[in-house]
Amino acid sequence: GAGVSQSPRYKVTKRGQDVALRCDPISGHVSLYWYRQALGQGPEFLTYFNYEAQQDKSGLPNDRFSAERPEGSISTLTIQRTEQRDSAMYRCASSLSGTGYEQFFGPGTRLTVL
Amino acid sequence: DQQVKQNSPSLSVQEGRISILNCDYTNSMFDYFLWYKKYPAEGPTFLISISSIKDKNEDGRFTVFLNKSAKHLSLHIVPSQPGDSAVYFCAASETGTASKLTFGTGTRLQVTL
Image 1 (spheres, rainbow over the protein chains, first blue to last red):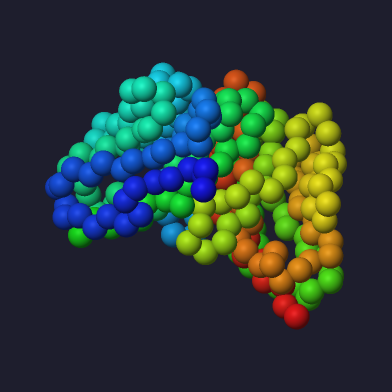
Image 2: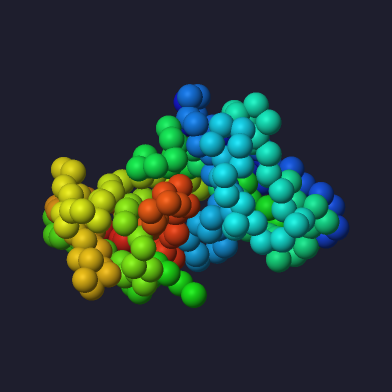
């Protein structure tokens, strides 16, 4: 299909390891978003891009979290020195543009930090 | 501080009847509101939206009502169908940060036969 894809779907890592989560947005979508969703909660905004430019990273919890979208398409969310509290579902979404258009979500990456 | 609140974690409705899901918000700068539906093991799917310049938006069986003075919106599903059983999230964004969606905690709707 032509939806948003994310990989891996599941990631189990040990505390202290770095992880990289990948998002492939819908072709032609300008804007790409990262959210984190804890169990029983709604998605929580982390950061977003228009093309390759990171427009807002106010939701990133600390400097262990970073994201990039170097060619304006695929994006990577990197978490360094993972901690158990980082365990969550990480969701990516894309939209045609940043204003007034609905965001299409991917299936998410379930991250478990042991 | 939860800026978007869905106070009912679950709702059960009989097939054919009306489902009403409620959402309250505290940030008066929010001016665009959306409802998403989520099935297990899938990402949230956009359902319907409403701008703050309107008080109602309808799409087939789904209608969203917005009461700005009460900072309240609701999603009506008529008639409810078993396939509507899912978790429904209310989300909002504000002028100038239209891309940043703030979500509620979700309401699980079960439509029974």
